Image (cartoon, rainbow, N blue to C red; front, top):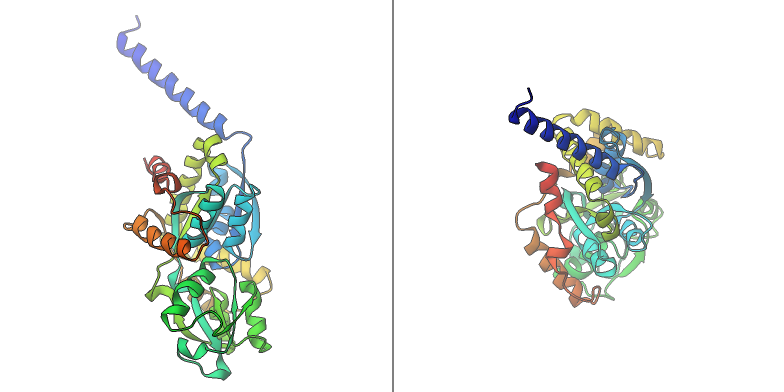
Length: 324
């Protein structure tokens, strides 16, 4: 005899199986076009793709590497890439231009960002950059903060120095050849330049900006693939755990990336650079207030048309589902 309890248990099991099959079906045939930058800010994403954690969730991906996150943002606005990382300022511009959605803050990178000068110039103060040629990745979060906030803070107006536009991965060579006098750069290039005796640090950004880096998505991808987004964020939870609990494995994987690209640096130099990236996927307290302040600066500088509606731009509900 089948009891009512058996019937209910069977129905529950059937619903569970159905739910799982629907979940898997939602991911079937979906290939994530993953964008990332090849500086240290993009390395948690690179590690995600090399860790096997996406495959473990049944997720397929293609990777799209660029020198700086603002280029990934532009690819996403053009709908060439589905997901990608960049700091808050680029995210705000991406939301303004293409409705991009913040899914999670994967890291903070204020300690990676520095203003550095050529060692032979013996410059120790920001004010002494007046009249100098400064390499800057124009349009990046790094570059926008320097131009809109840091330079004015130290009395440097536009026209007081020459901004030389270039990618961050080209700046050490420009410093070495004395094409530029200073650079606004990130890791691992800062630590390499320091180790090679090319440059010295004037300041890093951590005293003025923690620089949260978002994993963002196009609204099209989120609307069509909500189950994939949740599974993807579950993989990010595991990435965060591996950065915390298995740092040697993480370090070896990322070190192999840079050495494969021809960068010559010891493991100690590399570990110093990697140690400036604070990986802790989640939603930091005070984030919306921080983003509001950054948006007001970008609006003042006419880089966006309006302050975002944060309820549309930031979607912590997906992270909550991935954490359930």
